[in-house]
Length: 345
Image (cartoon, rainbow, N blue to C red; front, side, top):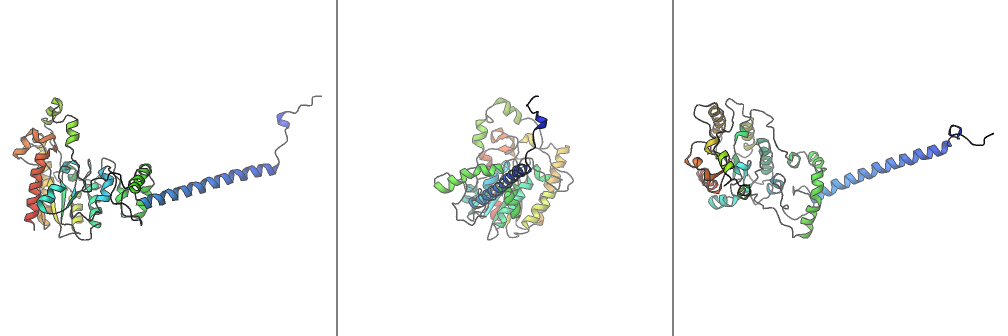
């Protein structure tokens, strides 16, 4: 008779051993959950305290400003800086407007809160942030009104990612937003900036000259890019409305009735201007009329329209592409803005 025992004949594990195994697993699971919760709370607390983007939400007295970074996040610090009494909103179509030069011409300290590739939804959020961080109503606001502000969609959809949570009035939304991978990546850089006191600070007034970027890519000399500049392609608009961005802007500025408002239709090259009698002309005219009516209704408001037939718009040396102009033209726009602001005193 064989003395071997098959696996099917093996004695079952004692009930006590199985219970002990289950208890160990349950204890491990509880420990894992507790550790994860503690780590999550600790991370959130650290993020709140070091205030990665200088929103002012922390109770700690930290070094002012933020390290050099994109304007979408740096605007949180710039927009609450009490040194500035006026602001520029829009996208790269107002990027060359210089706060320093506007200060020299108007005596008003400006900050640029523009965000490249942004539209009215982002601009209004940044405007709300700026206004609610002023102890007194600002002296002036400049808004770049391009075709994106002509949308008929009340949602005013944005094409590029934007940290809406960073500027939220809802503290819970802000705290949830802090639990993001890109915020975690910012931790080390923020701590180095705060602790060493030697890290470079992002430019407080937000000015960002895009000319070196465009010249670096050959937009001022590449034959193909220069030829593309001459290709007729009118920028869009909205002939019949509605114009939710204009309505939202008017409601926003109703909070500060004594603030001067400049509605700027930025320059475009002649190949982006609509041809007389074309469908594009109706699209452009409808949107222009909506903001012209806003300017007529609201005191201390002026519409400056560079998106029309002007001699400067026929000079290819003033443009990199159809909607991005160069420094000499930016100075002409600034001079017109300064004159309009002085006329509204």
